[in-house]
Structure formats: structure tokens, C-alpha cells
Length: 436
Image (cartoon, one colour):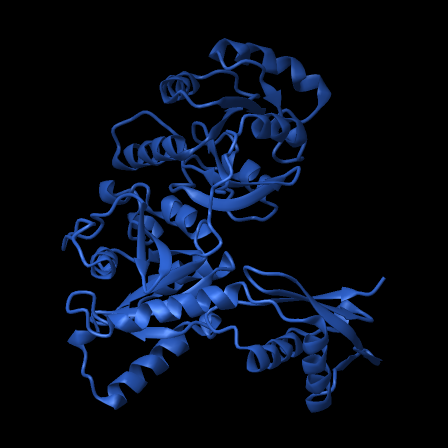
């Protein structure tokens, strides 16, 4: 079940980035008292009353012919189209402006649920200033203060009420859902066509041809799959280009629905910084990952060349050290047969469960190999461990004091668990908890 999407929309300098940072609990957006600082959509996960949703911060909508203003307005309109609910933010100290009225016209046309939030109402005496905003026609205005964090609870209560009801997706246990992500023109559509053995997806040399996520069912060797093709993701400064308006958010939605994510790399052009950022989306989502090096037919097939390329991949993707690497060519179908077995293995490892007694035998052996560290004269004691979840496999280690669990020792335990049980292709999570 995918998360609902909330867009914060308004003219520049009404406090959208401040509200965004408050709601997600981090300083993600740049906050500066200069109109137009946020020029792009910024995405983050947020939660309210046990309801998860994805929040979009937008550049302000401002009417004008200057190229930057046109791009900012286009960005906001894209976010509006993608959103399930819109927070329309206005400045309570300045009252209704002509720009607010223009934004309201755009929102009327969207036919999306809109919650009107009046920002910069920092105390009770200022609440009378909200009444003029009824004239915008969006019902009750919610007084809030991004700077002081006031009124956000009431605002979010209303936002969550407006989320569309999600029907339970009938995802069969034995069907593997996997998506393809990567920058434009790395061969995602060609790989889809190669796997399906037909021209199911349009293939073009023009970067960004695929503009939406497409689900396709197929069966191979009695295993059912659903493959989700996604638009290529470009760096943020390029995102406003018309062929890629929806790419980032739709790729994130595809990742959410996937069991396994294929991260595609172009062997011909090599690895760039954007490849790592794109792969990071799948890693942060806790999905199983397979690294696919496409266009391998353009590279020397000598063993030394393969070793050097793999060494380069591992150096750039250290956070994906658990992910297998598959080398293939979608066009010639060379080594294509090696891909789906790795997808199946990664999916199985993503749902693997380990019995508690066997897990604790491995933990005790690990303690014998490398005793726990001490800190400030106090030694870490590991009492026992248990697996509490899958997708990804998640382990809780009960200790005398979680503060004594250094990340390096946590990584050591992860390596011992992987050595004992595999988990290739799947991330695993380890949490230290004090035994109550």
C-alpha cells in the first residue's frame, strides 16, 4: 500500500520550508528569509498518528515571465498534480495578496482536497488576523506558527482525515515485485523488453522517454513476477525538464511497492555521483537490491577488466556491499539469464527468518571471537538477540546499556550474521535495546 502524498504550496516567503522541516523533524529544506530560495520540490517521509505519508516542499508559485519564476511555478503545479492533499500556506501577517489569489485559482482547478494554513500566527492575540482568509474559499483557516511549532497538530489532524482510503492491494505472497531505477538512458526500458522478450515498453535514445511507472506481469520458470519500469532520475537541477517532471516521486512510489530494486549502471559511461544518490533511495527504503551493470558488451571481456570494474563499483557503493552485481547487455541479451536468479535469491533473503536459538548461537560465537567493547569503564554485555521483522530482516539485541553499542561492533555483528545466514541482496537492521 503506497503512502499518501502531501504538497505544501504557496507563494514565496510564506514559510513553506520552515513548516516542512517541522513536519519531518529535520532541517532538510534550506530556510532563508529571501523569496525563492527553495527552487525545487524536496521530498521526505513524515508521520502523524501512526499514518505515514510523503511530504513535498515546493518552490513558491509566483506569477511572472522570468525563467526562474516559470520553473518554480511549474514545479509547484507538478507537486499539486502528484499530491493527494494540499496544504495551502499563506502569511497571516501580510493578509491576502494578489499572489495568494492567483495560487488559489490554480488550486481550484486541481480538484484536490486543500487545507488552508495561516502561518506566522505566533500568539493568541494574532488569531483575529486569520478571518479574512475565509475569502479564499477553502473553508476554515488553521492558524499555525512554523517558527514556534504552534497549531501543527490540528493542521495534521485535518490533513490525515482527507487522505484517500486505500484498498488493500492484493499482493500474492509468491509473486516477486521488482522495479528498475537509474539515471536516464541507462537502458531500463531495453531491459524490460529483453526480460519480456517483446517490445512492451517504448525504447528511445532520448533520455527521459519513460515518464511513468508501468506494471507488467510475467512468468519465468514457474516464478511469477511483476516488473515496475520507472522514469529515469536526474539530479535536482534538471528535474524541471518536461520529460522528467514526475520521475523522482514516481520512482520513490515504485520503490515502496517493490520487493527487489534493480539499480542500473551504464558500463559505457561509468559510475557518476548521481548513480549513488539514486541507489541510496532503495537502500534507505530497506529494499533488497541487485546492482545491474548494463551495456556490458561495450566493455573489454578480459577477466582483469571485470575485476577492475567490480572493484570500482564496490568502492563507489560501499553502502550496498550486500548487493550482488550482475553484468549483462539488454540489447544483445548477453548474460541476461543471470539476472532473475539473483532477483529471486535477493527476494528470498529479504523475507528470511532465523530461529532465535540458532541466532543466539551465532551471537555467542561472535562474542568469543571478538569480546564486547568497554566505554567509560563500563563493558557492553549482550544478553540475547531475536529477529523481530522481515523486509528487511530486523534483529533486536538486548544489552545492559545501548549507549555502549558502538557502530563498529554493530557492524561486526552484522558481518557475523551474514556469514552464518547469507542475506545476499538484502539489507539487515540491528537495534540495541535495554532489557526491561
